[in-house]
Length: 193
Image (cartoon, rainbow, N blue to C red; front, side):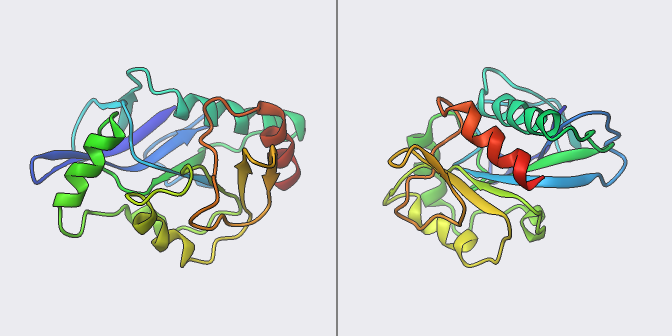
């Protein structure tokens, strides 16, 4: 259900092409991206192999299962079957694996041109932003996403306690899925699937 390609680069582990499969799937098939979420950085999930798309050990990661539950609930509420090989793509501001954001930011700051995920060229019909608020360390990484023309963009604003149907600005607080109310996200996804 949770897959990614892990790579060792310059002595650090990076996680690319993270996919949350929503139902029946065959990773040999290119699959169908039904949406994407943009978050801060890969957290605690661990690789089982390097260099290939492989299943992950979640190791306490709560974001990936939360996103799975929100999209799955939206398909149920919309009374739509989940297409075979449907997945949600996970993009990150940077792809260095480290559950401690401060430590990850410090390492990434030392790497010239940290590697990006090639899947960012995709243009799914739904793009959910969940990268947190205004942050001197993270704002420079947000710029590449803000410069792209994604469709179906939204984020949950804690200040408004509502789904905002647009791309966030750098300073908007695009709430992380953990601790976020379920109903507004599922209702929004149900409408836009």
